[in-house]
Image 1 (cartoon, rainbow, N blue to C red):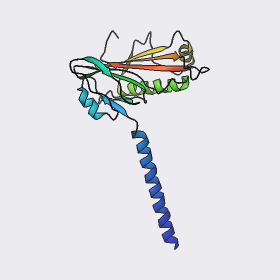
Image 2: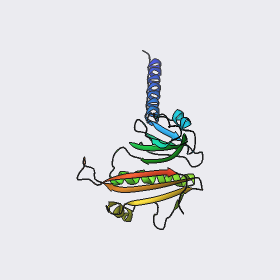
Image 3: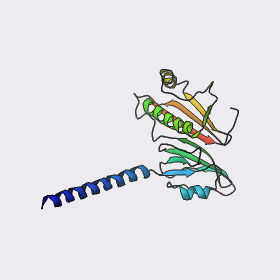
Image 4: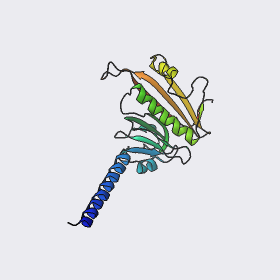
Length: 203
C-alpha cells in the first residue's frame, strides 16, 4: 500500500467513525420516550404526536392517564414551551377528550439535593428564557442554589414551592420536599412535583 492510499484509508476510517459517533449521539438524545402536548388540544392529537404510549381518553369522562413507560414531558407551545427530564410519574388529565392538566415528578427516583437543585434550576431557566414570570414571590420565591434555600429544603417541615405564570395562558407550580427513601436510608433524598394547568388563584 503506497503512502497516498494509506492516508485515504485513514481519512475514510475517521469519517466513518465520526458518522457512527454522530448517529449514536442522535439516538441517545432522541431515544427517551416523551409525551408532547398542548393544553386543551384533542387527546388523540397528543397520542399520535407522542413517542411514549398512553391510553385513549374515555368519551364523556373527566379522568387521566399515565404513560406506559418512563417519559419526559415536552410542552410544545411555540412561545412558552419547555421540556422536563424523564419522569416515572407523569399523569395527564382529560376532559371531554381534550388534554386537561399535568401533574408529574420530573425524575426517575428520589434525588440527592445537588441533583434536585439542578433539575429545578434547569426548569426555571427554561421558563424565564421563554417569558414565564414568577408569581407570589413574597411567600414563594423562585428556587436558588443558596445556603438559605439548601437549609430550607433540608428542613422536613418546610420544603419549597414556586409559582410561574405565562400571561393568562398557563401556570406552573413547582414543589420540592424531603423524602424517606428506604433504599438509601442514610441519604437525604428529595421529590419534585410539577403541576401545569390553566391559571388559577390570584397572583
